[in-house]
Amino acid sequence: MRDITAKVNSLRTATAQAILRVSPETILMIQENRVPKGDPLAVAKVAAVQAAKNTPQLIPYCHPVPLDFVGVDFELSTDQIRITATTKAIYKTGVEMEALSAVSVAALNLYDMLKMLDDEMRIETIELLEKQGGKGDFKQTFASRLKAAVIVISDTVAAGKKQDRSGRLIVQRLETEGLTVPYYQTVADEPDTIRAVVQNYTSHDAVDLIITTGGTGVSPRDQTPESLAELFEQRLPGVEEAMRSYGQLRTPYAMLSRSMAGTIGKTIVLCFPGSSGGVQDAMDALFPAILHTYKMLWGGGHEQAKTLASSSASSAQE
Image (cartoon, rainbow, N blue to C red; front, side, top):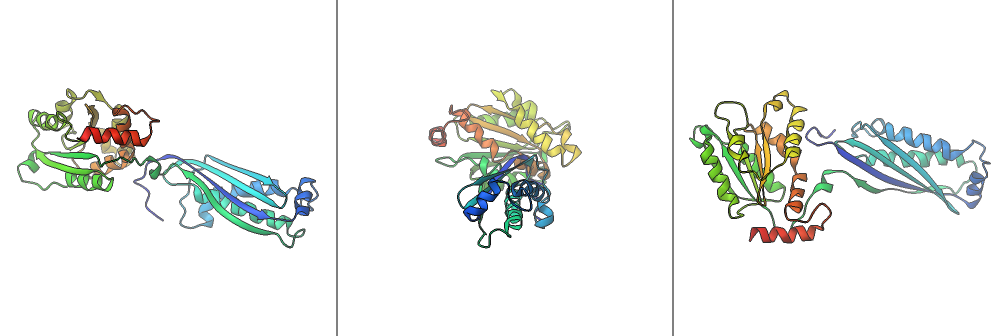
């Protein structure tokens, strides 16, 4: 099985379809309730629900998914039965295989109950019509790539006594997400220095995103939140909650983090923990959905077209 522990729960939906080709006489017998084995549609519906719920037992590489809904519908026309199944779950992985299993088993049950009546009957298609809720649904597109700065806040790294891992991890992940990272630097845990570096990037719209790593714990030298709180024009408490709740599911130490998020002008500032594990969790929790913030920062709102947001991005970076 694929490792999905890093994924974030979201509402996942899928709709699949199967078409069973039958004779007009068979359709008429179903409509008039004259099928010897009973109502085939009712039996096929129950079978479809059971198949969706038991998909991992049928397909070994499928993860067990806590399904919240399985809907099955039948549409009878002159010479075919169209079977449609919709599945929903709030989970880390999609439910398309559950929907496909549902329509497949429904078609097989109809075939079994009708085969004595129709020698020419055949299952013609089984296909996925739609799926939603995966990470790809939260991807954001921009006319030009967003620019980011990564600031490593650590006395030991700044003094050259320790190699930076967390900052480099952030750079690599941002580039994977489609951003450019022209600025990377390390500074000591000094409030004035931290503020000065962040203000330098935000005062002339040099970057769209700043991520700091380090200084969010509770040691005497952990001063990143206090250093930047006064610079934030807006706090993003939901982003902070998302980081901590995601981390808390993986380690109880996440509750000790004082990670912050906010905006300064058109720049988003994210303050991550200093550990590489904390950074990995924060990136997994926030990206790519956090990039939707730019639509609102640029005045486009939630429903504004991506092209408008992209145009604003270009203006902000000029």
